[in-house]
Amino acid sequence: MTMGRDTGETAQRTGPGRRSLLERIYLPAVIRGLVNTLGHLFKIQLITKGSAKGFTVEYPERRMPVRRGYRGEHRLKKDAQGREKCVACMMCATACPSHCIRIVGEEAPWPDRDSRPRIFEIDLLRCIYCGMCEEACPCDAIELTETFNIVATSRAEKLYTKERLLEG
Amino acid sequence: MVAGTLKVLLIYGAVFGLVPIAVLAERRIAGFIQNRLGPNRVGPQGLLQPVADVIKLLFKEEIVPAGADRLLYLLGPFLVFAPAAFAFAVMPVGRGIQIADLGVGVLFAVAVSSFSVYGIVLGGWASNNKWSLIGGLRSSAQIVSYEVAIGLALVSVLMTTGTVHMQGIVEEQVDNGWLLLRQPLAFLIFLVAAFAETNRLPFDLPECEAELVAGYHTEYSSMKFALFFLGEYIALITASALIATLFLGGWDPVVSPGLLGPPGQAAFWGDLVSVAAFSGKVVVLVFFFIWVRWTLPRFRYDQLMALGWKVLVPLGLANIFLSAILGAFET
Image 1 (cartoon, rainbow over the protein chains, first blue to last red):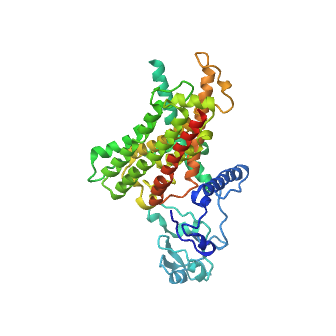
Image 2: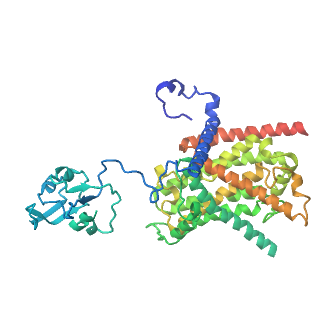
Image 3: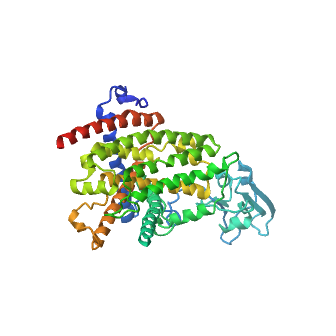
C-alpha cells in the first residue's frame, strides 16, 4: 500500500520500504484518531450543556452581533418633522453601479427645498449592496441598515417602494 | 405457538426500533465529533427527527428511471433489507432465548447476511446508471473478498469453541472466558471485515459519494431508498450482534455468571438480565461503528482489496495454524 507523496520534513520517510512495521499496521494511528474524535465528542457536549460557549450560534433564538459598517437593507431617513429627507437630487441613482434606483421627483410643498421624490424605488434583486447611494447622498437621506435577512416570496416584494423604505 | 410468535415480534420489534435510534445517534454523534450540534430541532434533543424523516420519505415521489429493469429495480432494496434481518433469527439474544435454535447457527447467520450483496448488485444493475453499476460491482467484489477473511476468522473461533451452535458458543464463553481475549487476532480480522461487509466507512466504496454520487442507490427515491437505508442499518445491528455473540460473550453479563441464577422456569429475571447484557453489548458496538465512521477517511479501492487479500486473509490463515497448535498443546 503506497500512499501519496508527502512534502517537507517527512519526505524521506515516504518510500514504501521506509515505514516502520507499526506505521504500516495502521492500528496505532487508528487508535490515536479514535481517541481524538472521542475527545471532540465529549468536549462539545460539556460546552453546550454548561454554558453558551459552544461554537454554534443557534440562529433564530441567538444571533451573531452585526459588524459595524455592515451594509444590509436600505432605508430612507426622516427629518425632525417626520418628512423624508430626500430631495430627489438623483445623486444616488447616478452613483448606483447596478442602476437599481428609480426616482421620479415632484415639487415640494415645503419652503426649505425645491423638490421631493414622488416615486423612490429600489430593486433589491438588482442591488449589489455596495453602499454607493449612501456615499453619494448630499442630504444623508438614504442609509444601509444592519438588516440582513431580507426575505420575499415573490419578485414584486423585492421592489421596495418609497413607503416601504421610509418604514425601515 | 403464541410464545414463538411473541418472541419473533419482540425481537424484530426491538431490532426495527433500534434503527431510527441508530440513525439519529449517527447524525448527532457525527455532529458532536465535528464540533457541530446535529439535528436538535424536531422534538426534545431532536428525538422526533426520525419520525419527520420517515414522513418525508413516505410522501416523496417514486421515480423509476427510464430504461431501468423494473422487476430487478423493485427487487433490489428488498433483497438488501430482508437478508440482513434474517440473520437475527438465529441470534441468541438471551440465555436460551432465540427465534430459531439452528444446529448450524453461525453458518446460517454468516451465509444469510452476506446474501444482501445480491440486492446491491441487482439494484445497481437495474438502475441503468453507470454510477449505480460501478457501486454495485465494487460492492460485490468487496463483500466476496471480505467474506473470505470472515470465514477464516470464524474457523479459528469454531476451533476454539468446538461448536457451530450459537447458544453453544456463548455458553462455552461463559465457562471459559470471552473469545475476545482468547482469539484477539480473529476478533480484529472479524471486526475489520465486518466494516467492509456492512459497507460502512472506512470501506463504504459502494457508496463513495465523492466519486459515485451515491453508488448503488443513486437512482432510488422515496420508500425504496428508505428500504435500502433500513437494510443498511439492520445489517449494522446484525453485524454488531454477531460480533457480540462470537467474541464478547453474547448474553454473558460482565459481572458474574452467578447473577443469572440457574436456568429453568423460575429464572425469569436471570433471563432478562442476560437479554439486557446482550442488548448493551450490541448498543456499544453500534456506537463503535458510528464512532469509527466519523474518525477514519475512506480507503482507496486498491487499498481496500490489498488489505483484504494481502493482509487479512494471510493473517486469518496464520491464526488458524496458531490456534491449531495451541489447541494441540492444551489437549
